Image (tube, rainbow over all chains, first blue to last red; front, side):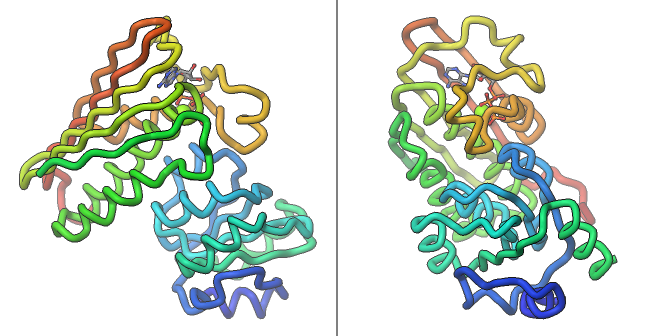
Length: 110
Length: 143
Ligand SMILES: Nc1ncnc2c1ncn2[C@@H]1O[C@H](COP(=O)(O)OP(=O)(O)OP(=O)(O)O)[C@@H](O)[C@H]1O
Ligand SMILES: [Mg+2]
């Protein structure tokens, strides 16, 4: 499945990084601890988090993460959105909390 | 080949820049992607530790066909008890840094796990030197 299909199926907002919507997704990872993601999230996954700062994109890029989903209507900070554009890694949004969104994404990808 | 980078202490906006540059270099040199993955994880954690815990530092990376050696030398408070710092969950990160999602106390264990050798020396009130060593192409296939 590609990022664009997830956006449509889960009714997500695209905050930035539209150029990366055709990236292939291999799974998901839900965490707000950056070292946890750095150590345990594999390439090609979608990262679900409440962190909205630029370091999220640094990690997403270093780990070849397919896209980031911000929960609870959170918006990326300006420099996070800017880096998402240059890296072409989409930052998406939902009004749902992490638990519900993770459950829905799991159903889609399992 | 030798590459040098500077790290600005406290500057989270540029944290990870050196790791990103080195990742690009390793890709250009056609280093195995499994090796690139573990080098990037260990180096990023070491780089962020300088940003989060020290005043500033320098990275020098030595890359050849069989191994990668990266040395991070910082000026900072040093680590009084390295064995304690190595424990998963141990962190002295400030509340502000924790709010950003750093400070889980997982960085040093991640570094250990992803290197073939790691050497840390530290002098309190002076600084810390971390050496990360990777032997290339040793990962078994299908990994
Ligand atoms: N370069 C350094 N200078 C001074 N202290 C350091 C340095 N690197 C690590 N430390 C000390 O070791 C502790 C553990 O480091 P570690 O990287 O494992 O966790 P952390 O940086 O606190 O959190 P995380 O890496 O999970 O975001 C730090 O909280 C800090 O006290
Ligand atoms: Mg750390």
